[in-house]
Amino acid sequence: MGMNSHLLGQENDRTALRLIHDFGWLRAPELGLLIWGAHTHHIKYGERILRKLAARHLVIPRPLPAHSGSAFVLSQRGADLLLESTGITARSGKDWGETLAGVWVAPKWWRHDLLAHSFLALLSSQGYTVIPERRLRRENAVDKLPDGLAIPPDKGDVFWVEIESTRKSGRNMDLMARALIKVALGKAPTLSRLKANQTMICYADGATDERGYRLDHRARVLNALQRHASDTVAVCLYKLSLKGLAVTDFSGEVVTITRDAVKQRLHQWRTLWCDTTENLEGGQELILEGLLLSVWQKKNTLWRWQVEDTHRVGQDGYPLILEFGEALTRTAAEEALAALPLWGD
Image (cartoon, rainbow, N blue to C red; front, side):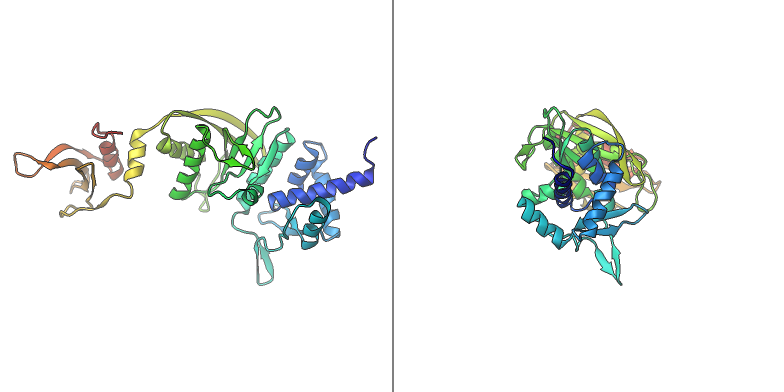
């Protein structure tokens, strides 16, 4: 015999509270997808259940910027009910964001969270089992976590989900690239008793930064992966289509990453350069494996580069120059040095 409407309503209420706890916050469209899948009226159902929970003071609505609707977090009463009815220890989300001069302000990362939540909810509506970052963070004490884990209906793979939405710093990009390479090589950490074996690197089509400049997340991610790849690996990239700031569709591709020794050397050298001891305009140098690498700008604006062997002396009585050349830019000069067949890696 099927569950009667009252019991079903109670079950949906508990499910909604648990999902808000798992994600940290949710809007009606994403909650509707997570509970009712791709049902025609999933948004209306999500709105209805959140209105009911708000009327019972189990959730707190928060207005998102950019006409993005309302986010709902658990109230203390909602957290208490979740513990009482399911045994799940939860916390109120009343401190999510901050209040300035009596006005609630969303945290800076809310756009990224909305992309991640809406993408995971869309996967869920297609039969995937999804675990969001907020839940992973509670259950695992590791430094680098994905934006979520996703398991397809056939249970054959576990996808490590990364959402690229902002211009990452060099350090954060390196952390992400190393984590993705580990996943692709079968060396991912075990998270919540799951070990990811596939990547799901997601980026918004036509994304821009805070200044309005276009961000080519695909190219930036692939360059970072090439810098860190020690072997040939395959990764899955997903281009996200948005309506407003939420994901409505996606398309995927498999990209083979090959090791780029020049990029890796340039990346390793970037913190080793120091000002030259000689009076060379704009000159910098670094010592590597007993060799002195130098770059400096000539008066005609060309950049000169050379490699000296610090342990050998040339006929002129100075350190032996092994290689030298000119380039139009500082970057091109460094690339020429990195491409020389002198390095043992």
